[in-house]
Length: 116
Image (cartoon, rainbow, N blue to C red; front, side):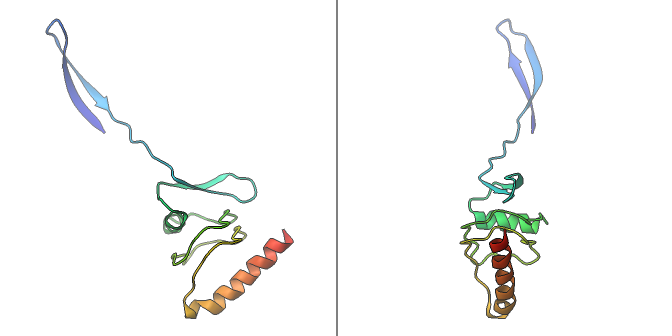
């Protein structure tokens, strides 16, 4: 953001200028790749749940994300690509309708993680 300023010097001369304020992004949550620790997504959100939802909303590919021990209870993960994501000890709730599909998905993740 730019702001015009005027400064009066000791000799009475007035100097005009422009002050530029830089916006500082405060990263609170970093989602990293489970294999090489590269950064997949950074967020200013307070919780991993909010950061993951934000990433999903923005279309970020979370494949291979390290979400170990993340509390994603009641998260909206529709359209999220979590294939090969590390989800050990990850807390997730599914509706009754989603449970059968989710169970198959989670079993597939367990089998992949056991092979890794």
